[in-house]
Length: 208
Image (cartoon, rainbow, N blue to C red):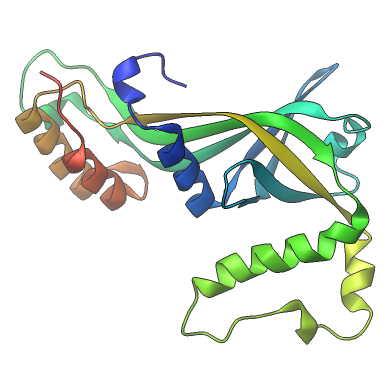
């Protein structure tokens, strides 16, 4: 997380809502020989108190979960390099604008009987976004196939303890300077979802 508080003005609820909508991130758990990372889809409960996910049974993180462990999920949003020339004023330096949300909490294994329900809820979340496509559901699987495939994965839950987010959108620049940078990010940005990032930059509150 960027240390400048001007980039941390979003409430926890807004950061969690962003994580819920993105629903994909990097899970990190400490181990004796260093941090373990895994890229995962996940599901945030409506009350924001729990995050549900699954891991391949052979994932090294699973071996760390004989007892609940502190964990973090990092969720990345749009990002881009910002050239100093794009501000339209002198004496600027290169930077990178981005959104990142971190959720921390205790990660635990859950009973295998809960796995099918978690997977159905996750697939429903994403299938709903593909409308008007008819949603895929697990009952389309041949008998016994889903059960065999689920033997290779385990269900997990994170009990949410903290949420923080960096929304680095040039809020520390005057409005005209930020607007100029947003225009150039949209046209020439180097990163991901630069049009979305530019729109967020235009909507950010400038700080004189």
